[in-house]
Image (spheres, rainbow, N blue to C red):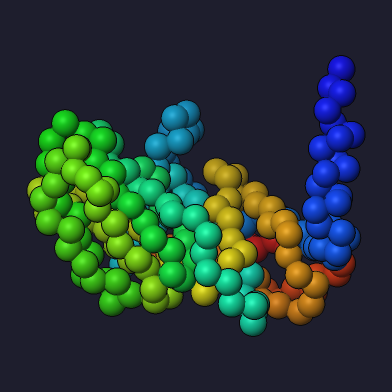
Amino acid sequence: MNLRGPFWFGAFFFASPISIFAQATVEGRVELPKSHAAPVVAKRYEIVTRGDALSTEPPLAVVYLEGAFPKSAPRSIKQIAQKNLTFVPSLLPVQVGTKIEFPNLDDTYHSIFSYSPAKRFDLGRYRPEERPIPSEIFDKPGLVTLRCDIHEHMRGLVLVLDTPHFVVSDADGRYRLRGLPRGKFLLKAWIDSRTTREQPVELKSGGTAHVDFQ
Ligand SMILES: [Cu+2]
């Protein structure tokens, strides 16, 4: 029996007396491109080029809410590691202004850079023990392709979004976004570097909206 449950519920209730009933949720499913890859066991996604578009393989979507939200600085520092000569995670959505650290977890050098207009940078060569951990602040919305000057096959994607409300879908395309304000917004689903679908959504206090992207 968990005796601490009611206590924690009480503490949470006390901490946020206004917002607890006001928040909305949106959930649904994004129709993802067909994949020929084996079922994902170890959640290992690679970045591939299909036609001219960059995406993860197996496919994933990033669902995000667009609107004029109060400006809030991103609170946490994110990380994209280099492990077994890949970027982990291979696709990371972040809010504009987020600092991302790039720890090298391999027993070799990496040299991470980007030519993308949303963020050009070059961290140069560095070893696993490099301190402070090399990092960049992503201060412009857009898609940033990460590459390594030493390992030509390495690719990673950072999707820099001008909203604090976003989530990566699961492998079936299902998603759930919680803690949203009420109102009318545009809900978007990023599928690859050339495909972003959108749908209007009306969110009500305490309610759950269902939005599917076909
Ligand atoms: Cu490398």
